[in-house]
Image (tube, rainbow, N blue to C red; front, side):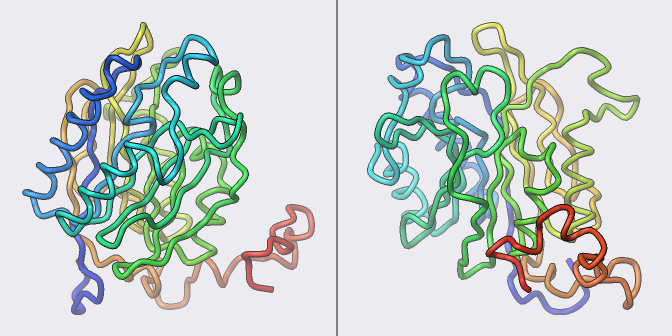
Length: 297
C-alpha cells in the first residue's frame, strides 16, 4: 500500500485450481471453483480471479465436444451461478468459460459483481488447437468501470502480445485480470528462480504499463496436457506482490492494494510518466495506435 490513504482499497485474490474437461465434470468444476472462491472471500478478498475456461476444463478433442461445453452469456448456468455468488458475498469475480453466440464459439471471460453482470471479453489471440474450436475475439479490449476501479480482462496467450495490456492501460485500466491455462512447453520452462516465461511477461506488462495484473493459472493434467501454475499478482512496478504460486498445487494468492493508485503512481521519480512519455509522433503512424477509437487523439 502507498503511504497516502487508500482511495480504493481492495484485497485481490487469484485462484489456482484444476478444472477437468468433460461434461461429466461440469458440476465438479463449479463446486471446486466456488469453494475456492469462498475461501478467498473468507480471506477478505473482494476481487477474485479464476482461470481461463474454469467451468469446463481446457482439452477438447473435437469441435462438437467444445459445443457440448458451451453456454450463452449472461444467461447460461455458469454465469448465473457466478452472479449469484458475487451478489451473495458482495464481491467482484472474473471467470472463464466457452461462450456460444449463434454458431460461433469463443474462449471468453466474464466480470460479475454485487449488482450482477458487468461485461465480457472474447479471447483475441488463440493458442494452438484453440483455433480449431474458437473464433477469434471480436469485442476489442474493453475496460469496465466499477465502484472499486476500472477493470480490464485478457486471456492467456494475449499476454504475449504487448498491444493487449497497452491498450487496456491506455483506456485507464487500474487492474487487468489475466485468466490463463498456461501449459508446459519445451524446455527450458523454468529458470533458476523457479519462474516461467509467463511470469516474466506478466511482470513486464505490469511494469511498462503502470498497471496491476492479477494472473490466475490452473494446475494439474487434463487429458494428457500439463499446466504449470505460477499464478501471481504483479504490482505497478512489475514485481510480484507476495509469492508466485508453484507449479503443482491448488492455492490462492492475495494482495492488498489501492486500486486507483495506478492513476498517479510515479515511475521511479516525479518526472517519468509512461503514458505521457510515449512518442506517438515517431512511431504511432507505423503501429496504427493513434487511430484506435479508444485512444486519446
